[in-house]
Length: 74
Image 1 (tube, rainbow, N blue to C red):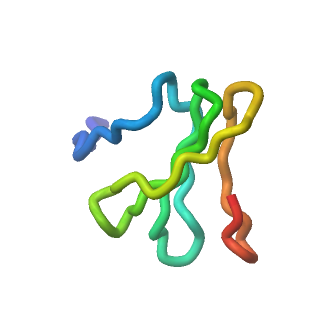
Image 2: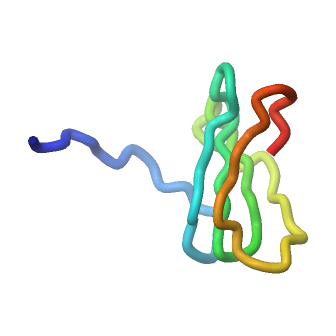
């Protein structure tokens, strides 16, 4: 079966490979992306995926990101 997916937008922000993405629970208003550049970027999914915040301080690449279903923490 042929898939009909099309790229809609490219998000610019990471300087290396993105390993994981996750939408916030509930309304999906925030997209988190984790990368080999040791950062997590939070994107506003309700406003054209504008960059909201870059979380720094990790000592190595980010393999996986997830939101807590209870309080929405990354």
